[in-house]
Length: 579
Image (cartoon, rainbow, N blue to C red; front, top):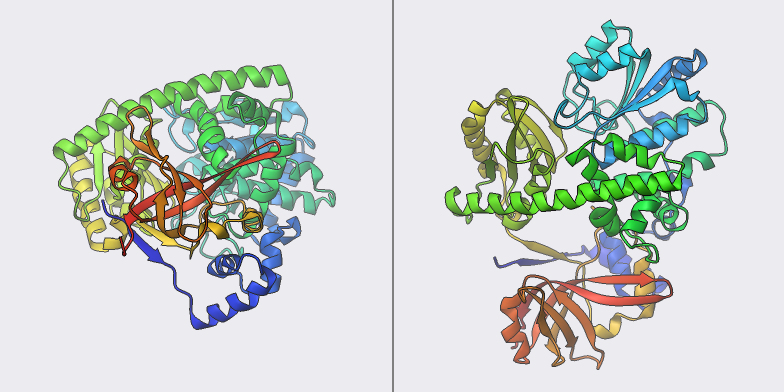
């Protein structure tokens, strides 16, 4: 599929701002353009962006119901009520439970504090009647629910009848009707004036604990801030925007993860052989996060929380090894289901040169894997994708979107066919009766075809700046590092270099020779740049012939102890116009 390269334009006013900011970066003028493209337009903005500070975090009491939530927690602690910390079984939910549980251990006897993660297969997503009955049986009178609960109207009503209060800490899109909780913390509530809407579920839990600390006059926040590594993991794994508060918390969380991580996270880092590497958001997404997720996908997220709250190094390492085995099994299932899904698409789905989304169903697929498969299909085919399997009497599944398309709105348009649904703009979980699948497929497809743009189903790259190899110098790389941490809405800059040529040593690599290991030169200097082009073997003959071409890429730096390795990760290749 031919990709489109979008050169991000600047207004005349923005061009003037670039010229002013270039004085701050005389040796690398491209940095000024990168800042303006991110909305950084004054020296004060530059300082706040390049030097994040925890003082930039918003007052937690700006969040609707924060006073109610803190008051209910204070009363529970004062009366020595039994409290349960409940969360979703994914990375965001388990890190949120671990953070709140660990922090409240400082103020609550161990016998009065429980944590609970539902099992994916037996209970499914969110609060269940089974959980409430268990809470009642052990004397719980307050449940703090994290990363879910915003739609649990029936369940929280049922719990209230039994004398159990709920404090809901969620970040998913709420419906018009809200559950009868003692307090609901969710910045996405329409009447919540909290200035940042992009918090993760763990982020909402952190703000709750921050509000609790402030209410009790705890001016020293070290105990809470020492758990920012857990929050950084949730921010990375849940793909929330790394802007505003999230950028600050991810920055300090990564610092903690690299210098003095949580014991459970340290054991995972050790298993991943990342001990001597400077960890990044990518390491969380591709190494740490999947292992924490694997327990909830394959067995029970309870084990992930046990790992993350562990204070015993040998116990933590044994738990991390078990979770690593779950991850290995998860990868095997992932490969198999993705293969089967692709075969279904090739056999039965219409040509994918139009705007139709993907909706596929197989009764035998593992429920814990289908969200990953939906992500892979959306990335591969550039289509919103829904993958469904059978569980507990219903078809249940996950959807993933493409850039800029609101899949939540598409799913919501079919809500009369659904038993339950919830999520974000880019990812939604859903449950429906088997017999409703054909009609859901028809109506979902109809909505997508009507509302999606041609550009959203075409691979495209937003180009931040054009560079020569000579410009990729130490000053430039030093300034680029200050843009970390990268992630949604603060992605790694995408660059173009033109008229580059093979140095004569590029070669095909990989088990099936499916990648190109590049050694390139451009026409402006004698500098040789190393690169990798994954899955682009069709370009090798042209490249090896010595013809000029343009590359679209991001710069990858790997830092081990005191050494740094630089590589261009090539996203797209095309012949130069004057070739």
